[in-house]
Length: 285
Image 1 (spheres, rainbow, N blue to C red):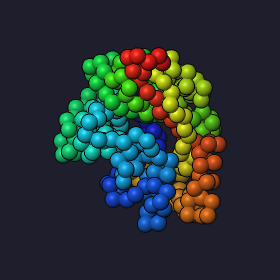
Image 2: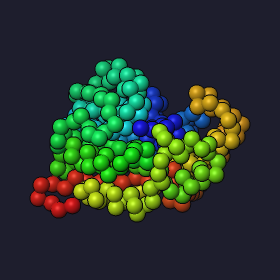
Image 3: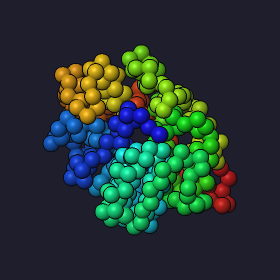
Image 4: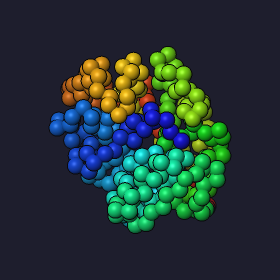
């Protein structure tokens, strides 16, 4: 369900490095090379906090959890949870992505695992299965986002938590001026979801919105520059990108770096995030 751009947002940049470094403000940015800078930036935004086992700040993963990742892509969110003993279910429309992920899951330490090729309407998952549902950078691709949201609502247990992200409209409108036409054509992005529209979509699905957050200014600018460089994603070395990485690294290490990162993330984030909850059986949405 994702184009290549989505796979490099902060929650899609987990690598083996994430198991060996602390990607929190206290961990700083020393000791990271340029290839890990996106991971560091994501950690500063609250993603993949290894020391506390939080997939996002406030949401700790353990062996009692059942994760469903709808549109799992490379499966890094699934692997983060699997390594903490959770039961995990990965879903993606791309059979190659699922084929690459299954061998990784077999040796991950997951309580159990399953991986499905599906367009998510419907999901091949029983009602009230998950304690955590992730649907990241998916809704901008699908024909009917309301149907996908209805499905992810269905598969959550009462009280389940949801991490839902879509690209932010300001950043997407910037990409219109620099990205190739294919960026806004199927199977890539076919809609821009406004901020209030995103909230309304989640509420209309029956979920309770607990938090709205914005992150990824670094990645929005990186992609705008990437299109100009005309390099392949398998080899993204280019002086323009290298200098942008150096600039962002220097900013994060500066006296006001974390504050400035937060301010820029609010101004023009790569993505908007909603943390939501499925109401309990006695609770109104």
